[in-house]
Structure formats: structure tokens, C-alpha cells
Length: 350
Image (tube, rainbow, N blue to C red; front, side, top):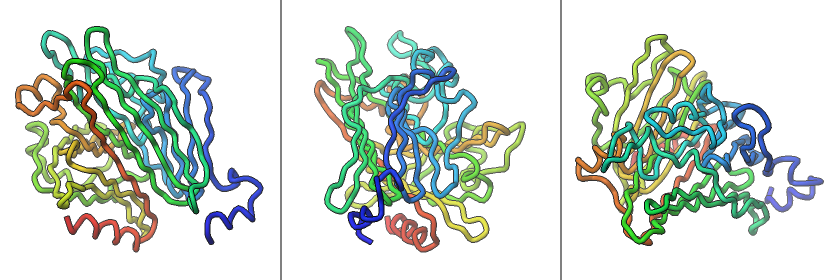
């Protein structure tokens, strides 16, 4: 049935989907503004306006896809940028953006300390648009805003982010336009920390990553390269397994990955597509610890070691004054074997 004809059966579009904007009221989440999105086809997720417009809890076809850390949603005022204190405000969720001048281990760069994974996920956005309406036969829901990472006599970076979905699509499109607003060049480190958790993530979960080259992030991971293909069961003494992939791509630089669960003959999962022009690597972090059971797949532009090592490697990305780069994530969920075969074939041809 054409989507517009469907309206003949509805009093209001909220019968099947839509968006709800609200503010959280309890604990360390108090004051955080958020938008819940429901595509009417089993995809439900939260956009955290006051946390860099990152994505919180996500459910598809009644399967929870995301790892939710014990810290929960944490308001920006609790952020501590020293060392690894970022972990105290890491709530998990489907997407935690890391950057904009630091991603990876804490380090000192040009005399200034940089904490784990940078500031951007703890910066509130300036909301510019939260609207839904018909565009032809599509009912489009879009949230857009700007995040500023600035310092007097220092970095002046902005991100204009839009998060878009279409009713009944099972699809999320994220676009980030990152601009250096200063008169000096600026480092740019960016990592999209996409966090998978139980029940979607378990030892039955499978991945297809069109790898061209893989290296272990540290010596331990290098010695356990086989672990990248399968998530272990939870363990009280789990180790961190971290890998950095370089992927095959088409002639225009488009690439991506596929992750799914096929237990009991049910194929449910997600394909993530992006372009390598500004995201040349894919990080993979696995931590199968009891009560911290998580795997993150992370399109990124760095080696996840921190800004100082990145400069030492000669691979630190710089933005010139007024330069702007665009990153897009195209996220498509599926729930049948036929859809899985189609999405997998798209990546196998790269």
C-alpha cells in the first residue's frame, strides 16, 4: 500500500510511528534533552541532543542491539576530560562519537593533556530542526543540530549533524559536516564508536567485513588475530581484543560492514555503509567481560592511539582554516534471509 493511502486508516501518524521530544528528569541524566524516533516498522531509537546528538538505545524488531553501560545517560556537566575519566560518562548506546581533536588513548600533545576519546560526545548540540512531514510518498523524520568544540585562542570546530529516517524504512542516515571555523589549521580525529550488545550480540553473532589488511591494535591482539571473527561468551576475566582494519572499497571509495545473528534460522542484523575518503579505517573492539559485554565497530580516520602517536606516525589529519569535510553513515537493518543475502552480496563485490 502506498504510504499516503495508509493515512486513510489512521487518525494520526503517531498510531504507527513518529518522533517525541522530551527532557530527562532523574539522576545524572537530569536535564538531557532527547528525541525518540519510531519508524513504524520495528526500528526505535533515541537521539541524545545534549550528548553531541549521538544515538542512545536502539531496538529493531524487538531485539535490543545496543550495549548500555552502567553509567547510563549522563548529562554533559559531569564530563571529566582527564585521563580515562571519559569512561565515567560513557553510556554506550548505538553511536558514541569520539573526537574532534582526540581519539584513543590519553596522551600529551604539544604540552597539553588529552583525555580518552575527546570531548564531542559530551557537548550539547544547538538544535536547529526537529520535524517530520511528507516528502512525496515518504514520511520523513529528521533531527538536525550543531555541536561546537571551541576554545578562546584555540580550536574552533563545529559539526552540523543530521539524523534522518523514513517511515517503514528500517534505515537511519547520519550526515556530519565538520568545519574548522578558525584562522589556524586544526587537527581532526574522528571515530564513530558503534556499540553492539546483548541480546543481539552473543556467541552466535556473525560479521562480514571486506578486509584488505588487518593489524592488532596491541601486542596481545596481534597474538590473537583469530578472535576478531567471533565474539566469545562472557567471562569474569575477559581481555580486550582490538583490531584495525583497512577495507576494500568500490571505485568511489564506498565500503562498509555487515553484522547479524542467525540463531534458530532467524536472520536479523544491520549493514553500515560509508566512504573511505574521510574514514579510511575500521576499528573493532571486543570486550567479552561479564556485565560489560560489548563489541564496537568503529569507522575512523586514525589508529585509535591518541593525537600524539598519530602525529608521530605522520598520519594526523589536519583541517585548514574554513575547510569542511563531510562524513555519512548509511545504516540499514534487516530481518529476513533474503535481505541478508542482498546486503552481504553488496559487500562481497567490493
